[in-house]
Image 1 (cartoon, rainbow, N blue to C red):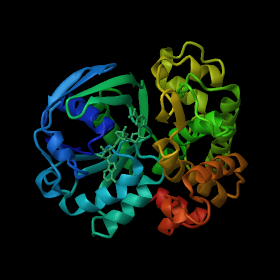
Image 2 (image 1 turned 180 degrees about the vertical axis):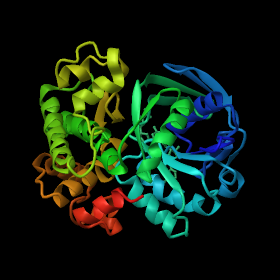
Image 3 (image 1 turned 90 degrees about the horizontal axis):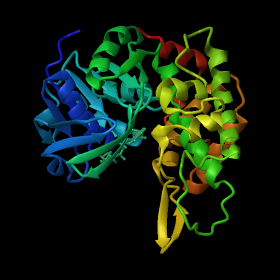
Length: 383
Ligand code: NAI
């Protein structure tokens, strides 16, 4: 691996503002920010301070909305963005990336590799090495834009994949150093797409909280994780079982240990922060890292709240998560009644039909000419 002399973080949200001080302190090299969205580049010029589960402070060396100012010379370029912003950002930065740069997404969500390969190939940049993380290492929220971020929780370990898949053994130690936490190699981006637990947790818990909502305003905002009901936990368990069936179906063709059952993943990621890991339900409601996190709601009057279905728990995690795994399952000849139920329910809330009419708005492999299991497996194991 080349020594890392400069890193660029793409994005200006919670995760991007957390990564900048973490990476600057850990890597002792300049960290720049590419922030083309709105006026964020102007608002990200000062020192950012992290408090809570991680403490650090640093200022980006340079922040710009112009990729020509910050992308050239970067050894590592990291997208820390909601998945719907990946493609447009990749297209903006592709012409300016150095040969040999590492380009990745934290988190990758489902199908990042299909989208990145296509966006880069369209601009003649098929030479780049990609990486992705299974999740964001932190639960974090901006307190004051461009100045202060509260890190509510930090995971013990996170899995990462690369393309070519064989390079992850070299890349994972660099990411471990950059993030100050264990980054463990996954066999491929295909395993990482299936291992994306956000695709289960976020839509599954939304379904648990609101599938029987009667449309009347609620007097209180439910706790998203600690308010999980047994019914919600059972919906999660069914989604989880469908992902595990895909894992079992593909296990003989590709190493899939990163695709952990959900309770195992919670224990692996949060360890002793979970007081009672004995069931899926208890692992959520006794996880200290989830304390106080609320369901996405809109206030419509004094003491009157309604669910915010446009929040990324549905608008990101269904088209860039659950829909991708469902598509892989169907290519593998598996039925997914629970995924279908949750995807269709989310679609009704968002006025989308992610399985048929609006499938082009998702990152299913079929949208990238990967329309048979053989093609998908060949793509996922390409050297
Ligand atoms: P965020 O909601 O704070 O990110 C918003 C940022 O994304 C904006 O500030 C802007 O820089 C960029 N952006 C938004 N729309 C854009 C567009 N149309 N074009 C270009 N850029 C655009 O997101 P956050 O919280 O940083 O999350 C990043 C990723 O990490 C998401 O996939 C999220 O689901 C995931 N994640 C976040 C966690 C958290 O605690 N913040 C926890 C676990 C996962």
